[in-house]
Length: 114
Length: 111
Image (tube, rainbow over all chains, first blue to last red; front, side, top):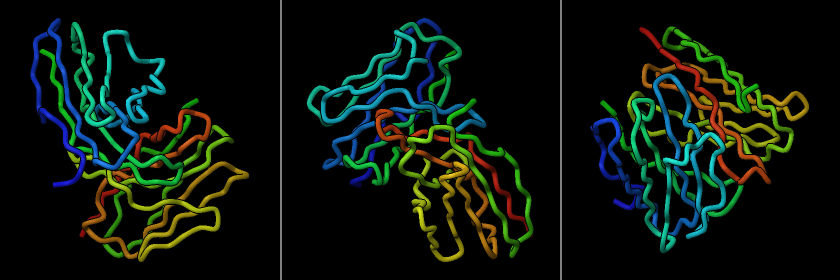
């Protein structure tokens, strides 16, 4: 399978715990995006990378969230001290560097904070 | 005001009907436009790009009106399998080149 893969697919955690998600993009894609989606809403931008550089981070993103893409390949998204409001689907997407190019999404990691 | 606005629906239509969705965007620097489809509990997938001259792909037609800053999607001869959420997506040059999504419009095609 050469698509975008995310791990884990589901995560249940207790409030206050830290969680980390992984995304493996399509290998030749230099852009990688993280989005969050809640029920009835469209995906909300969190951050994006071009190669290993994190070029933008949403102003809405709490400092409990951090993302890395150390070698310009896979990326991790960490949420520290999780809160119930963090419960959502976390989607990763990758694309080539172009305004008109398609972004391919992974199947997402569904986080439930209890 | 949201950057990309859509009527959330749901639009309930009979099989074979023609249905149209509109989407408005607020940033005049928007440069690329797309419609994505998202099935329940699945990831979004590109349905079609939207070009200035308008474009058609089978039963689907997309239009762009830059002056009024809106995008439309027309689906002809609706099929049951068209039932999904349709996401309007905008890419703003200089805005980090990130894709900005609307809330999505839910379509239900019924027998």
